[in-house]
Length: 477
Image 1 (cartoon, rainbow, N blue to C red):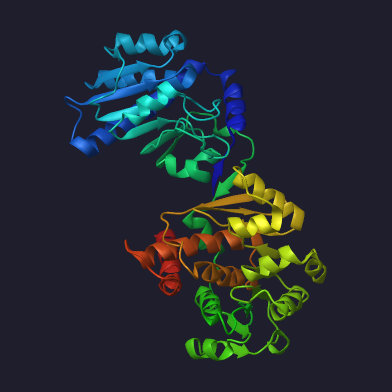
Image 2: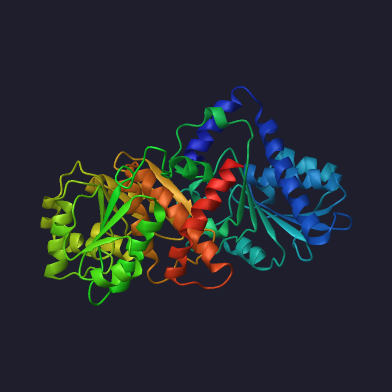
């Protein structure tokens, strides 16, 4: 797992390190990393550095200092570097002196630059770019390397409320910040490179974590020599209706493909499910389904009386539940439904923003804080869908799954995700980790299914085994 830390946490760690190491040393380490990233980008774009030009957009304080020191390193590598000082009187003194000694020039434009370095504002800044900085950024026609974060992006939420930098690469120090992984800032950050500047041991526990393929491979249930269909977990699916039978097929199929256990379906789409997935034990209602280790409820269920009764029965079953789609709408509209659930029985809620608003109020700019509040309020794991999916546990743990693309944004995609979560819950996985692993595999399956072109949810579903195989193969090798 990789950590995500707030700006305050990173600054506090830096202050602790400064008691042992000169601040200037850390700045030069950071600037050297920025310079190397610029050199790599120049090499990719033009095949070398000879005759190439780099522009620096330099603000006040340490962020501008990092850019100026990076410019000094680039000058020594034969790159022509011009710095635009947005606040000349507040420019970093040592960085500016080093830049000038190395042959850097001061100008009022970065026109003609092959690469531009964004050193306008750092972690302390809030709000969008000021007009003069916004005009300069708007004039840039070259790839941008941002120092620590794209200027104009809120560091702790990734929110954007006006002019800002859209970086191709962000070089950040010590660890990722929320703006690199959630909200519009995650997109504006481009490719994020984390550089160790010697503060790792001084960082507090992270605000959130990112799962890696090794985490998924470790957690995903794989049958052993003594396993059978029951020991691996029996997943119950209460989904679909006469109007939406496809939701039942997608959710059920995802559970079938996720593990080697057993799936039971209960609902009015039993015949359709049985036809598509003959290995599923399909019945007409929850009471006849038999024993399961977890339930998925909600996709295509409907929000009328029949759907309400199904949800109440599932919540009262005393096993972990993944509640999605119509189940969330029902819970939001009828608080008495919560009475059917033992609060100690694991529950995973999987809302998108509009469902979340019905359930817990507007998400707002801070997606991590919103998911945490809802998880504590409902004593449930909350998976807040989005380009970056946020998964919060009632105990405050948070993980983020960043999408490689937007291919999962298609009808029925959420039904597939709920089936994956249900299968992992039935296998006995920790609900928070189950939701995170499911989101990771779901996103990878969408990417594999799309292969650069739009793909429907049924193709996403079919790619689940390939996604699992891809993760395990990469981990094993």
